Image (tube, rainbow, N blue to C red):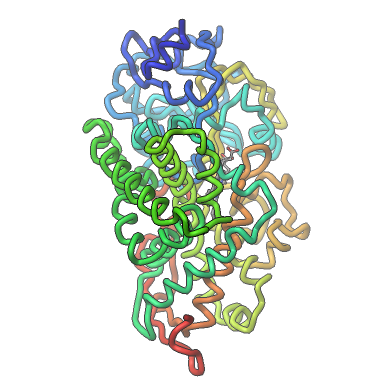
Length: 522
Ligand code: HEM
């Protein structure tokens, strides 16, 4: 009975999703608990080498878009399938591989992912296959191919399973099981007021901490501000206050997946140590969230996301309830931090490097500030969009109709299409956006070729929240301080695969309170 094996937390491999060549590679227990695995084998008939496939949908997280360990980088100890052949693709387009069977093109790809895909596209055209680190990527860059990728239903080519492959080596599995509050639920309602006040208070705390003058490195500072904004939104203003924030950040950083693509070896180490450090950090975060919840008892605090999350677990016994609430908070924060702070940072970088825009923003142009945010995200996107094929799917790339068999990943790389889809897109210009949408004047052959928050059924549910957070945070900082960049240009880190990029060099600024601004917001 597959169900009972799954409940016990160890998949017996009946559904084939965890047992590869007689060895338990990855128990999808948490996915089964959360989802709909019926234990039926789902290997495609044309796939000579079975890969784990399962229709179960994991707890939602903002990856692969948001980064985390890529399967391309984080499959430690997987030499088991060196000799395994990869899923069939008919007809096979041009293919990039390597001399070492499992490694394939992995080494070249990881050195500079954007450069790798861009060069491959120039040499091989808009559809090609990359065999790397045990995976077969069916890469699409043509308008029809990319549109088809975003259209594919979850049951045929899974965002959820691809995402799970990205984070499974780093995140403790208990975090994925039984989550009840996804960003879809939190942001689904139109009650934006729920979080706008929390964001304002969080920025005020940040400004208090910055004081009247000083220097900071933009990406480090925005990372801290991102923590503050996120924790304020889903764990309450208490979590964003100095009392809790400085305890939460180092613990969260131990679980964070977003560094894995920059440091793949760290991910291997996490797996090798049974995620002990990460599990300890999770336990400690659970204690902190329980403290916040206990302090709130009887105070009448309410109406925020934390209370909404608490209500959703009202049926659980004390202890288990607080643990579950804390795990929801951590999952939300993982999704948020992987993109939000870098998006904040690039927006500030670009605004500071364009004094004409800065001046208009300081005098109150919020629409321009939001368009600068979208444009900054577009240019800094390093997400690889992935869907893991579950049943044979047809991809018509506009010229050839390919059948892609289960186990392959259908992929496109945003950093390539975002800058090549139309003339002028290689430059920063907020005029490329009308509100939060790509302007109709940008002559793209398909709108899907330019992506900030994704397209179709898996597009980002937190887009409105993220753009509001950037607008509120940067407006308050720029109103408060004159900020002088001590750098002339900034470039994305070439090695980055996944998420909004970090910069390849420090972006330091000097700031001081503007004349006539009171020294404290409180
Ligand atoms: C500037 C910030 C952000 C950017 C640029 C961003 C980008 C994206 C992109 C491109 C996707 C589509 C992935 C795909 O199609 O493969 C996505 C999906 C997603 N994002 Fe974000 N994101 C941001 C912030 C956030 C935040 C703050 C959260 C949560 C608190 C979040 C949660 C999610 C989730 C849950 C999905 C998956 C949706 C699904 O399952 O259908 N994102 N994001």
